[in-house]
Length: 117
Image (tube, rainbow, N blue to C red; front, side, top):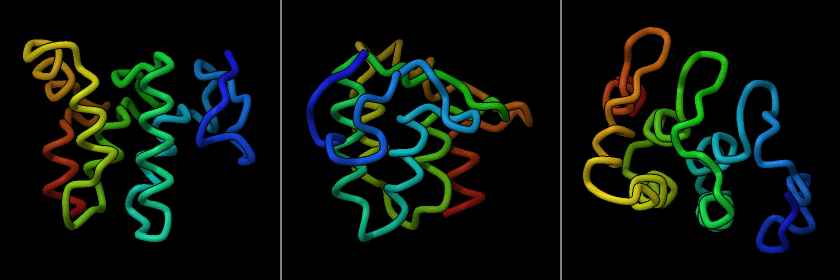
């Protein structure tokens, strides 16, 4: 799937949303970029575009971490990407399911926020 939006002109332009980059999806990468102040606005726009084009917020990387885990880890304040991932859930039950996802170590995104923030 290819779409035009904030990713055009970057290395993610034309990316297959289902094909992972080193075990991580483009949404994982946007979540990781959100921790860098100079990339936070780009990351938020990229996450919005990816989610609008059916990126799966519950997709896990090789360690079982979702993009929400990545967004929650290593930030000292909630990021726009974290909020956009949570808002992408269709209802409260889907949001709770996303929040309950655990990685291979049994950690939720809340654990990642506490440990890495």
